[in-house]
Length: 362
Image (cartoon, rainbow, N blue to C red; front, side, top):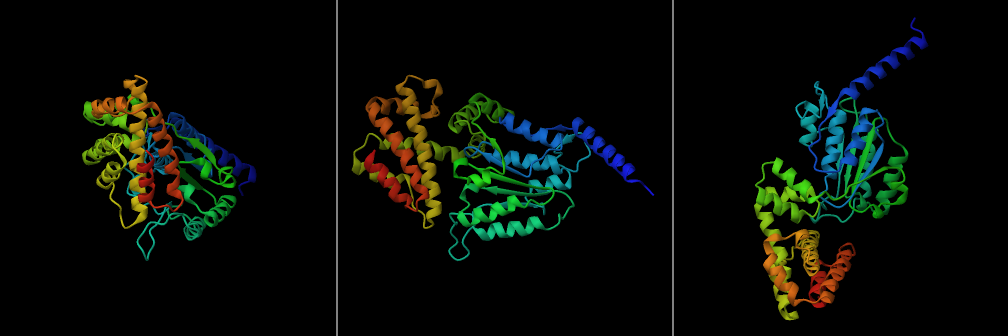
């Protein structure tokens, strides 16, 4: 019979062999910026110290979702080469195609009756997730849950999710993707490893776009408009219509600001179209106000004679024209007003009312 000591020695040898193989492994993640988060997660894989739960926090389009995918691909990849993820094995292809049976993705869902997007992640979604995580792995490996906009967990779903964190199953990883860590209950945040995602330098984003064969003029333009968000830069670079729409939204505020109230309201009708689904209107209005706040930022920079840092090169003549017409006080007031009104999107106030409020008080 094999003694207990012999089994322990065999287990130790297997573990040491695994760690030696991992130490030689190279991890290539196609990521722009976020070196600290990337190095931390790669080290966790190499040293067999993968945590049970993580929070990836920071503004949208910084690469949180992309890094989550690269992380789990590197962990689960079945490729035989020395570089992971290989992006060629069955596991990598399943993850790329969002079809891996052991990876569960949660976010807001549509109401079956109305077809409208729910405002929260509801408790039934968490109950279903808990059941799935309690089951065995289809591929005898890791089980992963990725929850987007996790700050939208309501009181009931957050309490249910807390139980999932408190009763972890083996080889399970939970990744919460949030834009505002302060909106996550402390009882949940305290049980997760928190990785902060920060804006990326403009030149680094431009170089990344150039490496993807984006034309230099477009790369420069998109890197500026992205304001440190590589994902936004890539989206704009790959969608000429969206880039044109972004430009129109920026220019619209420059046309609105110098006008009297009645004309501001008329121009709002041209810029913003209300959708029957308020959640769609709300998202659209929020994006519009994000673009307008970027315009205000450029006006502030031009008041300070800091053209180099402006985001919108294409509208510089118009920006200078409006800068000379609008006082410092009015520019700063507009910036504060937009910041305050953006908070109302979570208070069940119609997007149209919020925008009209902005027009009246600009």
